[in-house]
Amino acid sequence: MLTTLTTVYTDTRAADLAWALGREPLPALATLDLELAGTKLQLRLLGASHQVLMEEERGSCSETVACIAGSSTPLPLGVAKRVGDWEYEFAARVETLSRGSFAGRAQELLALVADHPNGLAGVFPGSPHAFTAMLAQRHEGQVHWRTWHAYPQEGQLVATRTKVGMRVPAPL
Image (cartoon, rainbow, N blue to C red; front, top):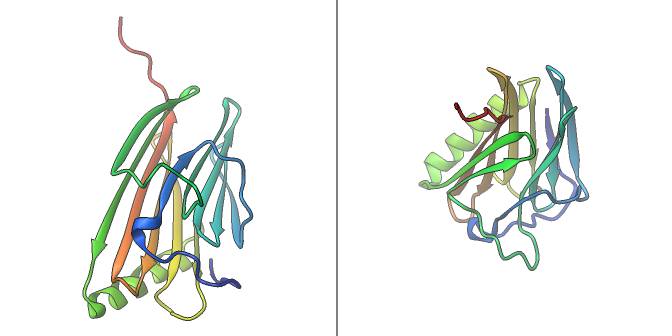
């Protein structure tokens, strides 16, 4: 699903993004509710990037990647944590692209997500290449999601990958 977000473009730089696990739901500009083999997901586009809410019988989890005022947790390159009965893995990378490469990559990602049944993308007013996009799936008993945050003024694209699955007990 592709939407134009009715807000002012809030994210100013890729370096302003912060990561948080376990935050309460923040006001969303667009949402997509999914059910992936018993796991409920809500993909949420915020004025300041994204939030994913996940719920199963075993509990719930939330991930927020956004420009959060007063946040002291910058966007990490990687995180591996236990969250209740789940193993949570997060990775992020920042790509700096030339203007032409950036425009092409932006169009490619928006096309991929807009046509995917588990995809949500929002374009910010003022630039067709200022967007946040999210794509979720379930694979081998784990829930995965990817996100892309585009900063055309810097030529930067922030890509994240998250994987959440049941914790496997250590062998005896």
